[in-house]
Length: 379
Image (cartoon, rainbow, N blue to C red; front, top):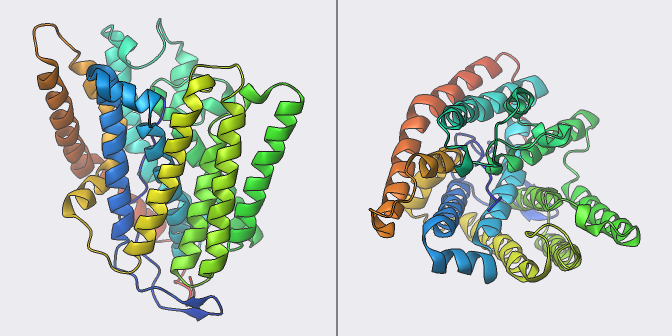
């Protein structure tokens, strides 16, 4: 399983003020975007169950691999949430320096803790639970400390780290668009992203290298789709245009998955894997769309999902560590081990959120205030 992605800052609030436009009135917003927390809570449960199933529960692992790709569905929900909330964060602070300070304090402290724990486990000979076999060169550890290891040709120390590089790439892209003053053209950007993916796919097929296209390209499709959903919630995009964008993204996802996963390539790309993966990707898009649609209209959010959403970044990063610390044993029933994994992951994540994530977030916000610009009337 190579699919997981972190949540984005749950402390980000919706921009102040209500607006109207030709696209229609802005939807009423809560002081927090609670439905995004709920989405992240649901998604991180899906990822956790996927990993526990693959490790200990054969029927669940088989279901996730052969019928419905539970983890990839969750991944796409996370990516879409990022696409929704990152423009909120950037436009709220109105300054790239403040934005990057808050991003860095959100991303790195807990990430470095998970990397340090992985190093300890590697030293104890438990590295097989985390990634490739054998000793890991110092250059790989250093590259992983930047989160950009995938783009410099280094493997991920924890397999789940791959999604963070795509998150960072989206931050960079959005920052460039902000600097150019075109970050609000979300519909155009989504269309360009979809067309670019299909053009790259066509070129890869023509050259016989379709298997080389990374699944991470779907991250950008979902992120820009999430951005268009955000524009709809604030009344900048009409429902008709939104429906066309969602339909276009669904077509891109379908074509990409059927073509790329049909060719000979890595096991997670080839043959029978394409249908469970396609089902998961499309289900992730549907779940995100439905929850944002109803959530923006004030649907009641289950408190348990809100709570899980708040600590979802910790759950995402620490689950592999917990599975390595408490390996399966023939002397302990599988059900007991699986329960220990779930309880330990949730408990540890609550602690790391309280003592690492939240203080780092607060510190980042304090540092960013020196550059933060007054909120605009229209977000």
